[in-house]
Image (cartoon, rainbow, N blue to C red; front, side, top):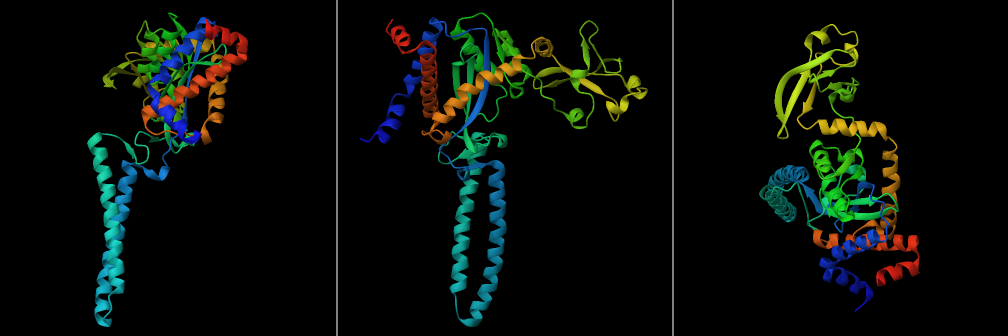
Length: 377
């Protein structure tokens, strides 16, 4: 058996063990005091799967393919009608036969598209990949066509990975707590600061993170219609908890005007019609009457905003910490892509890769002799 063949077999046959080995090495590094256990940087990156983009289909792309196929079928049928008349006059039939073959082939392809669309409707999935069924088309800005979303929690002291996970979820939103909490547990600390980029900003996830003892530091993304139109942002309105009111940039008080729900959370809208009507800076705020909404758990976002005001440098620290492992790992991986297919196999492959990164990093920190003695002990 060749080495090329032995490699995939080794990863596949031992995939259940790799995550456990990774975890045991993290515990060894903790015992050797290689983790600072004060700050975790959480980030994600996309790594290509063994699935060409042309072999990935979304509902939208399948509907577009079916629509195009129907248009071409209609064109072929019209041409077939004309060919039948012409062939009848000349006594030939080659052109008719050629068109009939094209119609049959296109009909078969349309049937495959329709079957895949029915499968998506049946499973509730958003897309389907034919070569690696678990892989997904990633967001365009990642420059990865079809792949997996890799999540890591990295300790700031020596840039060693504490927790790693592979998912086919396209976005990072909602993955903060489930990445940071296992890292806090394995580091055996009651609380730990966690920093991530704005892609992780979701009130429910940030609240879950804080409840789990992971103190989040995530910048608020500037989005929404007010931001797009160049009006005052929501964070320029100050919430007064004692009065349960917002103070707008003009110093006017906005009180509750509507109650509703958003994502199963209670939501209150605050406004002041009279103040908006007479406001001298209204043109910078709204075209009509400005309102600001607040979710029932938004106090957790206020606390996080205050933390970021006191430690703005922590966001630059995040970039410094997470870039090292991701940069190293992508260099090692075969053309920046996974060799194995299927989520379980890909998770095993990345566990082994993360273990190799941590091992090499620990060797650079301690030296070969000290590392050998620690393992032997």
